[in-house]
Image 1 (spheres, one colour):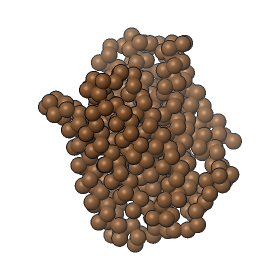
Image 2 (cartoon, rainbow, N blue to C red):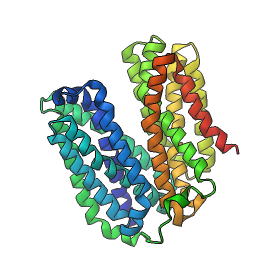
Image 3 (cartoon, helix red, strand yellow):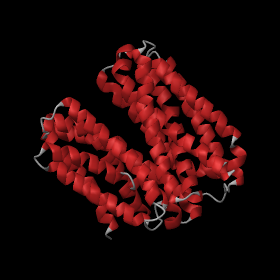
Image 4 (cartoon, rainbow, N blue to C red):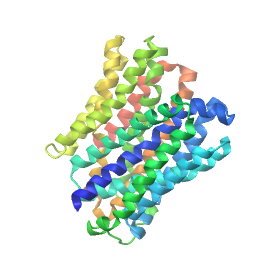
Amino acid sequence: MFSLLLAIIYLAFISLGLPDSLLGSAWPVMHEDLGAHLAYGGIPAMIIAGGTIVSSLFSDRLTRKFGAGLVTAASVLLTAGALFGFSLSKTFLSICLWGLPYGLGAGAVDAALNNYVARHYAPRHMSWLHCFWGIGASISPHIMGTALSRGAGWGAGYRTVGIIQICLTAILFISLPLWKRSGSEKKNRLPLRDVFKIRGVPLVLFCFFAYCALEATAGLWASSYLVKGRGIGADVAASFAALFFIGITGGRFLNGFLADRIPPRNLIRAGLGMIVFGIILILLPVDFLSLSGLVIAGLGCAPIYPLIIHATPANFGPERSQAVIGVQMAAAYVGSTFMPPLFGFLAGKVGIGLFPLYLAVFAGMMIIPRKR
């Protein structure tokens, strides 16, 4: 039963990644159909991110009251409904409104699943599960691209992913008895204000914020830096920017084979070292080294996020882990939502060459707390 539930959780992580890439891949066409300016794409993205932050902060209350299984199933259902809402939308305002349930569902399921896996499964599974999230995030642009190339429109792309989510929702509801047998607990809730008072939590939140800021900024701006700042061809730059995410996903797959044999702390330190080395290579005035540095930084990112999450029950206690992981997810979303646009603003004032130094700031923010 435990193995069957683990397989279902793997499917859920793919589902978690599926919606994340849809807006970006569809927006170049969506904005024309909706009569919205291209620059307005950041607005629904911010609304979705806001919903994920809110639901992450309240995930402890929801999970303790209803259990991880029901929260996961209901959250995926909420996300599926929002995807169908997107597919039927004819105005920019409706897209923004559907972004609310979209984000609320994503944040709740993210926090609930991460805590459940951290408490019940080995570190290798956390790495592989986040690798599966990357698979889901990689599949959805292809689904959207196929819908657009066949002339079905972006709405068909959203509907296709919505149907996949509905199928997964049915599987999750059927599997609810498995979650109960596997030890879902309903203990007293830890007030949110008390979570921030736990020794070590502020530093972990600091690291989560910095890590996701670095990852999201690199993912969004790496190609622009290589083209505008280094004069590298757009096709080559796009390929190596994609390799940054492939490095993260592939690195998490490989990390799964190491996570039960090497102490997680050592893997995290090695990852931070690779990020720093990658950033140094990006700074060097040799195109091949800069491109290689981007891939190395991606590989370095691989173990950090999943292994810090997996260590949460051990570091702060199983009874506190859901509350702590909830605020960790919120800190992560704040970093990934607001720091890439901030770089865009700074690049417009100072220049795109600021990119590797901007990444170095967040790498330093992760390293300094770990030395205290």
